[in-house]
Length: 360
Image (cartoon, rainbow, N blue to C red; front, side, top):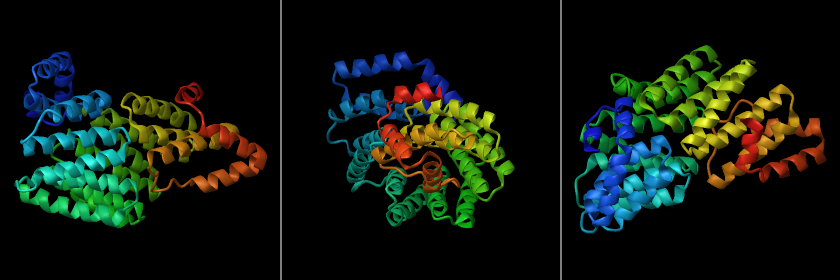
């Protein structure tokens, strides 16, 4: 896998790992059998981003945690292992556990100079603080991350820190500030045409254009983001870009196109086990059903989405122009209090299989 790590952040890297998947699994099994903890952990760390991108987070978390338990007195390797564990755990939507792993990694870096590793850890912590709306803490983590990334002279890590600062500005509806962060980040990484960072920044620039009502520009930027995610083979990113495109198509009244794209987004979210994107897809389906005049289905989907949002401890902001409270008020008015409450209660307990039957 060290060969793949030296490849650029493009689809070439993912395709290499895909081809070698069974050989790599056999190598990991060998390392387990012969108690080669440090070798096994090094290999598992190199595979962590692939596992996240392909949705193999359960397998990845198992491998990293098993080898971590075997390694002692290797603080740098342990810190890298805890970072990988945090990334995999966050992908499962287990934010408390992910934060604990990230802080364990920081503890391992105490006394060793690893500015790039520290920058990556503080960015990860910021994304977790962001999900629980601790924006002051998240900003502080990102300021530390930006300083450490500059020390290490890593432009992509600097860009990710700026991108996340832009995310916070967007949460606060500070569109000009957010766009400034995103454009600075994009300027840093735009030569890396296949990079995940570039794709994420283009997605967020698309979101700003959407919230400013510039729908044509938003669709163009989101399509650029989507094509990069496809090139890289980053399935969660594909789901997010398609979801955002579907929302704009709904707002434009292009409901058939929105429906088709939303189905693809949901399938990609489920393939990659991206739980936040899956819940957001359910929410967007609710808004789409409401636009189509199907108030019952809209209520069920919005309820299921809200139940999953609360379970995961996440938010869906910046708020959709069709805000949840406004949508529910209209649905309650159309259905009547009793019918609305009954459907909302049913939606809280819908299983994934039932939702798939409704939507796919």
